[in-house]
Image 1 (cartoon, helix red, strand yellow):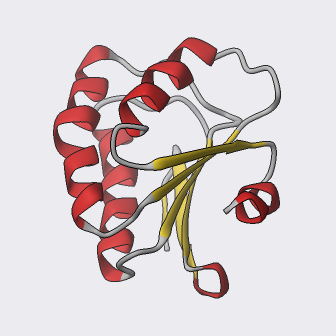
Image 2 (cartoon, rainbow, N blue to C red):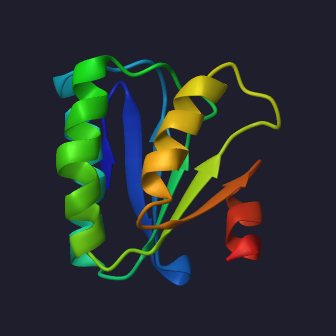
Length: 124
C-alpha cells in the first residue's frame, strides 16, 4: 500500500485490482509519486485492473498530462493491464479532464466509468 497526503493506492487481491484514490489536488512530484506507486503495484500484479477513484479529482497541469501520456500509459500497457476504471459521480466538475484522459486511455485499454468500486467490478 502507498499513502500520501494526496492519494492512496492499494492492491485488492480478491478482485485483482489496484485502487488509486485521489484525496486532493496534486501536481508534479505530489502527483507522480502516487501514480508511480500504482504503476509498481500493477507491475507486481500483472494483468490486474486499474481503478482510479477520481471523486476528489482535479484538473492536471500540462506537464503532468504529458508525463502521463508519454510515460505512465506506455508503462501501464507493459503490465498486462487491459481495463481502466474511473469512479466518478454522474456529473463531475472535471468532465473536460476526464474526457481528455478517457480519449487517450481508450487507445489501449477498456474504460469503465461508474459511481462506485463495486459498479466498476460489476461491469468488467
